[in-house]
Length: 272
Ligand SMILES: Nc1ncnc2c1ncn2[C@@H]1O[C@H](COP(=O)(O)OP(=O)(O)O)[C@@H](O)[C@H]1O
Ligand SMILES: [Mg+2]
Image (cartoon, rainbow, N blue to C red):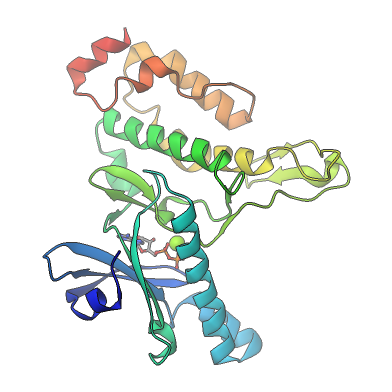
C-alpha cells in the first residue's frame, strides 16, 4: 500500500478532473509509475452550496471529507475489476482542510462518450459488458445490493481500455423503505417503474433495477445498436428491451456473445 511518504515524493503533479465534491490530480511516484490522487474540492459545488446554506467552513469541509472517506472505505470493501483500485491513503491533520485526506488510485482517462461513440462496435460492446459485470457484482456485493445514486458516464474512467467506476461517494446499500407498492415507484426523466414492497418494508430489488435502467439510458442506448454486427441485432434488441423496460431475464448478456469480446472483426465469426 502507498503511504503519506509516497505522496510526499510525488512529482509532475497535474490536474485531471473534478466534480462536485472531489479534485483529482495525477502524479508520478518515485518508482516512475503514474497514479491518480483524490482530495476534497474546496472550490467545488458541494462545499460552496453547503457554505451558502450553513456558512460553516469547517463543517462543510468536514462533510466533503466524510464523502471522500466513505469512498475510500467502499473501495476497500468492494473489490472488482470494474471498480478503480485504491493503492493507498494519507491522513495529515495539520494540513489545510482540502488536503487532510488523500486517496491514491489507479490512473485512468475520463470516459468520453463522444470518443466512445466513434470507436469500433466491439470496443463499445466491451464497455457495456464490463458495466453489466460490475452491476452484477454490485447487486450481490458483500454489502448487499448497492445502488449508484449518481450514475453517469463521468463517474467512470478507462484504465488500459477497461471500464472502472471511480466515483463511489453516492453509492448506497439501503433499499427504499416502504409501506405499500405505491411507495416504490422508481422515477426517471422519461419513464417510471413500479416495484413491489416486501413484507419486511423495503422495495424489492429496487437498487439493482435502478442501476440497470441507468445503464440502459446512459450506456446501452448509445453504445449498442449503432453499427452492430447484423447477426447480433436480435440479441441486442433483447438486451435493450429487457433493460429498457426492466422486464426479467436471467442472463442479460448471453454467454455466447460475451465470449467473443474483445475481438477483432474476423472473430465475430464465433457468434454465428
Ligand atoms: N482514477 C482516476 N483517473 C483519472 N481520472 C479520474 C480518476 N478518478 C476521477 N477522475 C476524473 O475526475 C472527475 C471527478 O472525480 P469524481 O470521483 O467523480 O469526483 P466527484 O465526487 O466530485 O464527482 C471524474 O469525473 C473523472 O473525470
Ligand atoms: Mg463524480
